[in-house]
Image (cartoon, rainbow, N blue to C red; front, side):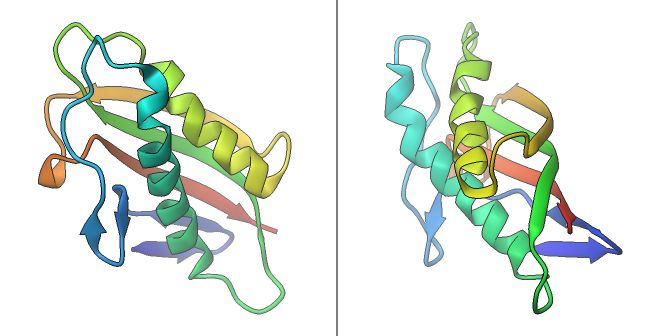
Length: 127
């Protein structure tokens, strides 16, 4: 789920799964309330962070997310990608502290694996 090279960790794309089961599915629609996608985004971010943390050795910690990709399964015409991606940024900042997020991309796509609404990947820096 993640690979490490020196002090950098690259996670695979993570969807909102728990114990291998997809908990949220379907396209994000233009008339959706943004908040209904918060839990799915946060779970995907948690899964990406957990995968990255799995490569750490004793005494190490992730100090920053250098790059955050938030892929969103959206219908045509959806334009609030950054607002939904903010849920991932906010979650990671709560876990890692202020100034822990570097660059970010919020990307709308026509579909995601298993019809997940969101997929997140990160590049993390180890202390």
